[in-house]
Image 1 (cartoon, rainbow, N blue to C red):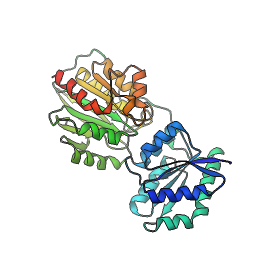
Image 2: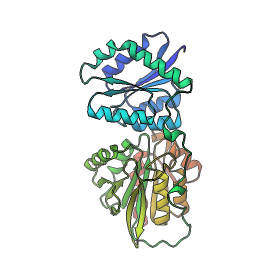
Image 3: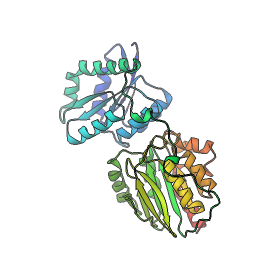
Image 4: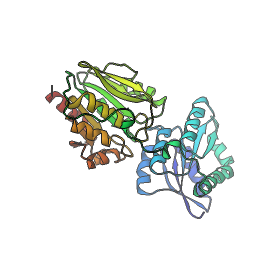
Length: 358
């Protein structure tokens, strides 16, 4: 177990430095990186894969459980999480262990640095233990990494291309994952209250989407809410898929609404971008606009292609602005993206297309 490289993801600088000191003092361990949030960690992992990760569950910019789920899907590693003893920390810890974390360091609400220093031996033993168990095939693997990778066929059939679709409204469908919380804010802040209705799938755990929707609503001139089954799709309003629920676009006559439902993981996600995009191809056809943004994996790539084949205008975020160039990359490779646009210009390009097609 010589030379184990550790990536530390902790938002509070003092705690991060303390962990760097603790790890650096052990001759069997070295710090390959110490970053403040999961978005920076994703960039670091893309350049160099560590042997083990310490992940604070109270990270800024992106919730740690979502990052952990994505890490276990794309690059499974032994992970030790930090959690506080309060109610919020306990809930996050349960979700993290379900997602594949192998060990936890439970912190007091005060005097954290002193606690860490006093627990140095325990912390070092936990780090080495998770690596041994991981390499010995005894790691805790989340269910979604061993389930078959299902497609949107599990929830609805493919669109019938060329079918006559009667509707009067346009609709914008967006999908994002790692880095998407900040990227969506950049786009939505620039959208006019006169814009078509917007549906969003952002990979986030149950419970986190409510807070995220409120944050967007407070920051944007359009209204944003967490979607509920039967919600109407209205101009100037964005509906965010709830965590752990799929969201589909449906139509009654010439009016759209959403269906929020459970079901199997699709592309190893619930909510799935592929499910939303396929439903848009079926229900809106050429009156839809599809947008796929930063994220690990390939969720949404097939759905964006289906939207384009059904006559929709489709966008993928340019590599230059992606936090993680995964989902847009695969969508482009499969031919699903008609336009490739950097984040700074995305809102303007969407608006131009929506206005031209009125």
